[in-house]
Length: 211
Image (tube, rainbow, N blue to C red; front, side, top):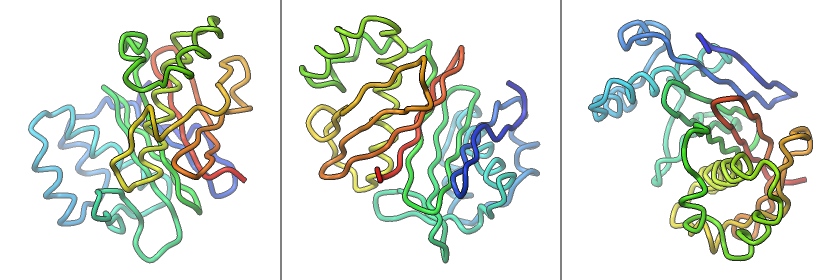
């Protein structure tokens, strides 16, 4: 995927993805950064990570929001100052993703080349593992979506300290054949609605509070 693309927009909800083909210097010309974000950029030693960071800010700009309004809470969760708009960022390899909504939101993007089955017991409870194994069809994709969903829920929560197996639970499982239905995740005492997009090389999950 080349350049940027808004792949989902419904009401106040926007999901954007950027297929990174530009170099760092070009990306720097496509967005504005606060002094705080310039300091954050300077902490990234790898060029790939710098490009991911810049592509996410450039994408936010294309989505109609000023990256100079980004602030962070004590746990590092981003938010847009002086607005009720929620924002979340994610990146994987040559992709950066952004979610924007009029409420709290979390997003995660993962490459499907990762071997999620090998680490499934690190992020799924025994009950979840049992249910996932019974699904069988599209199991690698479902395991990727479960991981990505819990990552997105972790970002939605924003307080940190969550145990993926004990504090985050898949309440209903994704069906890759019916992405419009999404799936449900329980985070602490909150039920979250997870929407997802699945492509040949990546999965992306975004979550908001259910209801």
